[in-house]
Length: 350
Image (cartoon, rainbow, N blue to C red):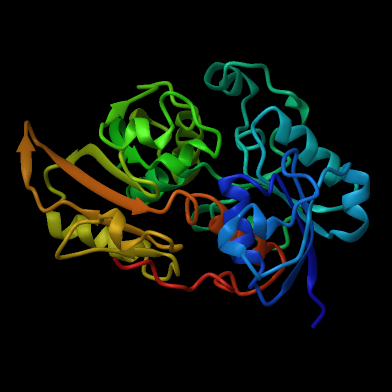
């Protein structure tokens, strides 16, 4: 079987490095181009040291018209505003495109402007990319040519809430606090993201206005919960990889804890990368470096005024299931491969 030729644009960031970690050992693809604006002319294994000896490809700064000559599929791991324009250029050149930025995820240009702080660069192209969350849009991803890969928080929170949305149990205010590792802020450090400055502290940021909020809200509507309203507070945690979410919402008291766990089990019974956790709660150490998202219901049984409070936790690696690994899962579906191809490795332990 011939291999699909793939290029990675923005290959020297953390997301690009994670893409290469999976793609260079993937049995059905060949990486033909590595493109970035920095480290030009250097071998990528001298920039991303974990790839030492795995490839002799060199970082190049090339226009899409050149890359498209020997790449059938392109991954873009670039900042928003930049990525969306390039994604559409590659699509217009006939490449399959998987964009890891936030540019093509939303359907509403107004929501993009409100949460990203700038006008959308190509509002007329919104809705032309399939949202790359297989657990919600698997059928649309099969054979897709243009994919907008989800954000890390959006993946973790959507997967925590998806079973209840589908079951018609999610309405009203849904409150979420989620902690994330420093790699989620990218390779270029700032005063609030540089790991030495966050390793000994925890810091909330962008409360109620994080850019993944409308993305999650859009997913809940698609899953059957149009009346759910998300209150989301992200927190910087002193770890490198991982997201841990805590989600609170109320259901009628008639829904017992056992029946709620049944909803979770049934929703994810056939999902290859979502594990329902019982007997303990999800934690980052159990998923680090892997494609798995662990979801579990807390054992508490609080009933007030006829309402039962449900507490759901999820944990995933922001760079894998929350980032590059999920993009590869979507690629597998787009290429009509088994979606788990190249992604079944267990997490790191310890």
